[in-house]
Length: 525
Image (tube, rainbow, N blue to C red):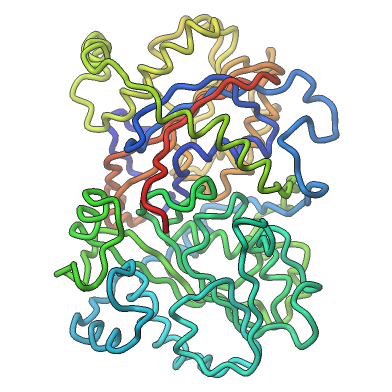
């Protein structure tokens, strides 16, 4: 992990941006309990959390969580080899390479009311690409279409039968996490599904995508789109953002084949988005073609294999290098998520840091001076408070995954380094086990700085960390919310620029519920 904020990770930026503290929801699924809370103004995009691993974690049954709607659902989480990720990366590299004609885009919008005005412009580009894909793969007249909202792509189709499964935010009904064939009524399985701008609102996207996979007909197509760069909306139901690579891996793990991937972004769009905290439409942007080194929106066309029984119940195992790992996927109620929001995330808007004290803190530490990734300084500053509050300054055994700043604040008894080697593909967090940590007690503190965005399956990796740390151990991790990807080609080892906005999270592994995070509840969708 580079300390200057620039990493040579190439295509290993596979995954997910965790939004505004709702990463706590993902860790809650692993039974990590939030215990302390620090916060930032409502306009901020960084935040921290402290969690604890319950001391009763040896119990095989799921330990106390927020109330769930049903028994946790086990799913396979395949462990992928580096060569397999590189193979998928070949498809991802094609995303965003085409330079779209701005006149054609405007002509495409034309009289389509769903695409005009102040609507979020990248959705226009996604619909434009969809219009090309439906011609290429003869999808313009599906026999049975499954939709989850009023997406603009629907207007391009001549539909035989349409099934609407639209989430009701007030009643909490038609939840994708509970989708099954029984709720779709009589008739054949859908041969096409469209899910626009919804992935960021799913607390467990892997479970939701697996449900969609299970209800579609063999050989059916699935078009999905979502933001990589956005502003919080429909809170508290706003959790994750995906890169093109993250989207591809998510779908492959669910069992889908990736047919086409695309993306769009521009500096102009990002500037307008964050200055006005509202989505700019085609009538307010000048650079409709976008900038190739900016990614703000991703989408793709995926297909369920014609012989899906080969992968049924083994989501994506065709890509795994060994047996898939089973994890629990609890289905949360709306009430439980609202409780998480009110008690953990929302309070993070209340804190104001002393800027001068934070600058003085950074200047006393040579590793922080001149750092071009300032939010990591903020994370370290907060970490210093937690060390005092929870008596963490002298851990017996620390588990680290890189040369993170936080180590400079500790007096360590024993240190276990589990650092990923990109060349040899060793020490992969997706394969972490207690047996590889050597002799000695389980770690009572773990630190994972700015790595979550490089994990193709964060839930699997965090479950592994949970399993190897001691009962009552603490876990501190920092999270990117906004970042920029510039042509990260693995083979050429070009740099990936990680700019602006991190989100930090700390985790102590018991049962108390003090907490925090940062989020903005402005700009409803």
